Length: 112
Length: 112
View 1 (cartoon, rainbow over the protein chains, first blue to last red):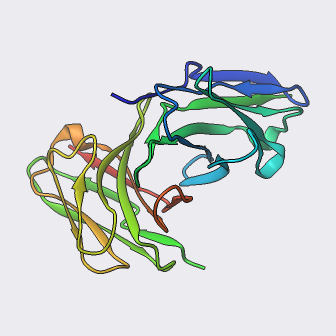
View 2: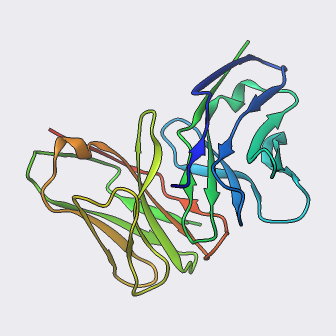
């Protein structure tokens, strides 16, 4: 079965430090990749998406992600985090259908 | 700018009771989805509707039914609620394949 893996359930980081949130998926055949952010008690908001083209994708709030077909990965990065980035981040993959399969999420906690 | 609207926002049910969660989108999207979110498990797809008039099972459909009432509305029904259905439920919609899914604010359901 196709799957999405976010190995890190929690990532603590100091403010202004860089961060990488990891995402791996089970098959690279016709994949479409997304990162969503969820702030407390809210719905999910799209950060960025990869459908085709350049493997480096830039999103909102200074985040970016790189599609690596050989590694079947789509890691999310930010060079300098802010307290307001504290949230849960979800990687999601579509294997050519209408629906998205989500990872289990990574809680990013930014500390002063 | 309502986007995706879910009602109710909170609900407490007794085991065996039934209820319907309502979802409406005003973006003229073709596809709509119901997910449940549980701690440590990410979002799991319950049912989806690729277009008006069609519905399909997702990953965890047991105990649920859905109705795509029209292009705007997609409801989720629990016929006989069980404590295992305690969760946060999210409705989402998208234009179609590979496009951004927009999420509602969620319904927090507790079954006692």
